[in-house]
Length: 208
Image (cartoon, rainbow, N blue to C red; front, side):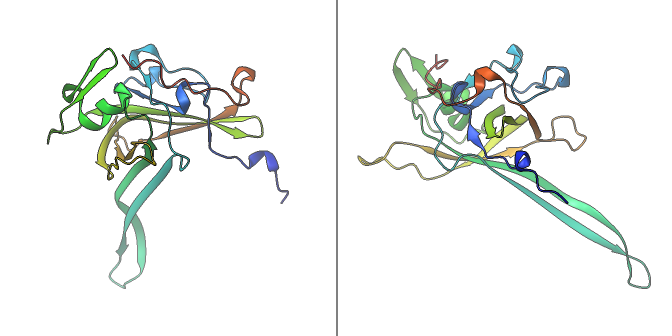
């Protein structure tokens, strides 16, 4: 079988669009979901750029537990999925980004007044959000990972040091928004000319 280099892709952020990822509302209308890897999210998501992420990028972990069903003779006749989960891990580097802060502390616990930020850390359940990651895969391809219903479940230790930026290592659970098992949408398409190449991060915008 021939090897095809155009099928070998990377996961570089598309920094020309919000730094590479967006945080938005949960929308359970599939007609408003992205249908390709390059089109902007529907305005109903109220998506805001998440800005800079660390060089570790986006890590997707899929856990699947199965149960083997045996007959009277001890032969395996069926394998069924007993548990399935998808988690996303990434590190946000914009510690004053309103969308990021509301994602990890909760909408009611973050107050933005001009350039001033007030955060109250509480035991409240964290909000459900949508996450949209836009990447350039090389070989003329764009790559997208879209989760319509996501919730941050843990945030790593936050260090306040002179030699490093304040950052948030996030782990988020991806939910089945329709109740039919579908959780994460991944799309690959030819990249648009306007999205090709490097650009400046737009993550500082939309932080009102």
